[in-house]
Image 1 (cartoon, rainbow, N blue to C red):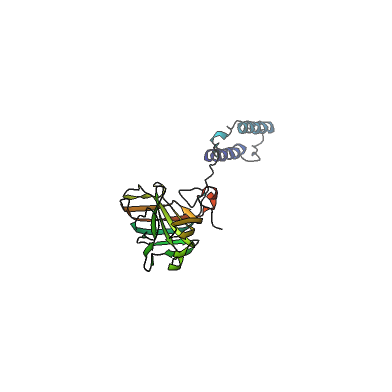
Image 2 (image 1 turned 135 degrees about the vertical axis):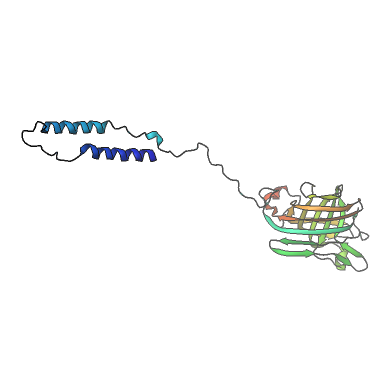
Length: 255
């Protein structure tokens, strides 16, 4: 654009220089150099010819906006959960357990030490150790199930609940029996935590999960002891809304 503007300025200057005074000054009568009207006409024609011969600006120097043929790439929707696409994070959890692993459940089973703190839909909860008089510590309770150690904490449990089925809220974590000492992410170790409702019958050895409010494998763990009979570990992570994968859950979602 700078070159075009400069040529235009020179073009205008040339016009003013070619035209000169509008009325040529006449000479004295009889002077051989007298300027005739015809000569004046010819001079104007020459000026017009000079104007027509001015080089036209080179239009190719005009900068043009570069238009890309590539279509804009649509950014993927952001997801709250970095592991499971489409699942919404609805809380967090932090737990610890240290105690024996029970091959079967009965009144002779014993729980371990540890607490789980979790937030579910902005509501904080804490499930602590539960001890029954004349029985001992029952929860948190670690038990073997199909190659995994299931550790469960209950919202409450008393002596009256020993007589039969009791409906309780439960927070649990599933840990493969062969988990070695060390740390890592839960998804990579095939661990998952859950919060829901459970039917408990200690005397009958029954622990049935009725429904879940959240299931998650998003978190980190650390195992400091696991000899097959005793386990010491911690874990923490995010809780997920199970509705996005309700068809694939091992338990129905709580209503």
